[in-house]
Length: 276
Length: 359
Figure 1 (tube, one colour):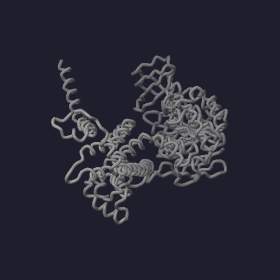
Figure 2 (cartoon, helix red, strand yellow):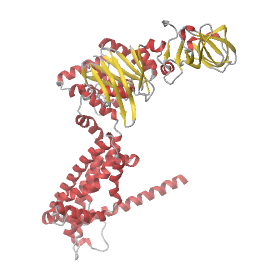
Figure 3 (tube, one colour):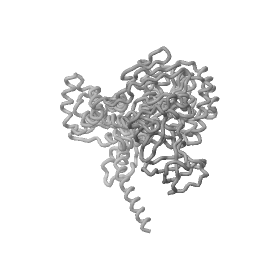
Figure 4 (cartoon, chains in turn red, green):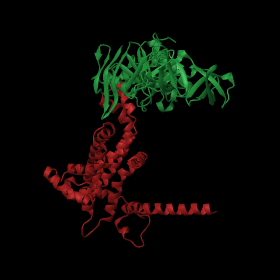
């Protein structure tokens, strides 16, 4: 009997947790579908009585939403590509080559996380200005790389360490060059690690707000996060229904990615947690 | 193809793994590198494979110095202890990989893979992934990957150590047969003296990065070059007694109450006497000894003896003697089986017979 009560309590707890998390998401979708006049009605309706897609239509046709969306896509893909490429090669070096200070180097990389990003933003901004790339998507790619790379490096390092060195030796003896062995044998083994690292980096860059806010203030280079904010939230008014529609569309790519690749993501966090 | 190691040295930082190794392997020979772990045998093999660089010295394969050749250009194949099969490729893909890297056209590749698979009875497994194979099957795939491109030299790094005892005995026989049929040079690293003794034509015994002895298995067993080889080869290992060689009617070895006559060439002074367990005999007029432990193994019995002077000896006896612990017996040492070693750190063999008796 007590076991049953225990299970019941546990289930109640878990479900209340799930509902707490789900409700804002649910409310976001519902709000985005309600016509304007239904929005502030009291008592509020739980489901829209006259569901409409007009907000989505307005967002796509009357605002630069699609432009921001494109920016975010380019930004996230570029960051992910750069981070994965550098982190893969870096992890290979940290695991396979023996040189002085190898472990110290790996630890130092993590030091970037000891500083709050607010502290880094101003120097980073000045750096971008000095480089002449301020106010461009490229500056954000560089900025995101600085904070995504250390974690990606550690994640891939633990994946790389799990690949037996004999595999590479065998490929070398079988006639492959070092690069050939890397491509034929290491990369396929590393694929789960690469996918989880890429997902992690993509999500990070897609959702980033603070750097985007400070480093970019030209309309043409704004990503979704800051773009939607500046477009729909002014000092006088918040366009709730448009904001919710934008939020739904912003979340869609992540939800789709997550649905297909979530097992890789959790595997990646596992690898990082146990060995890193 | 012959393989020559000329004064090969390998250092990892301050640690020297291989000290000035000289080794000449004849064409088509089956050589075992034998030694305890950390003796430098795997490092030696990896240097020959090109997976480790040499600190000093040269390695020649045939007429060619291979020091600076990458592994893929040395015309060698290697079987790893872990098999190192590529997990994402099928069995066929694994076997075909070295051919692919050498630019063999696809049709010829497929034919060769089929041929090799037939030799190793791998045909039904060609489409499987390594994970779906048993240990013995993986071992055969690793062997197939080495065989497929017909290299001049085969390197085998403890290839049988992950197999169970029965399969290991079977694979030993298969490897001997394979070597006989191919006639290619094979270098086989192992810490298992049984594998080395049964398979190799010559054994290179290594310890602490030094080559201790390089001889045929019988010679290594019957005329060990030094104390290390004497103790390392043979199970149970050779009895070694520290004592003095003195002059009586001829030279005699004295230690712990035992007096053992030696051959006429034995020099006086401190020395160590070695005698294998099978050369310790029961006899009525021998030195008294107490049986401390009896270990029946089936077809024979291993007996631990303690002499009156406190020397402990292991003896190999027939199984049917009915020996009991605590019994007092008398033992003699077979004069044919006496090995004399110098008392210094090297413990080199001293021939105490003017013309060594060929046992």
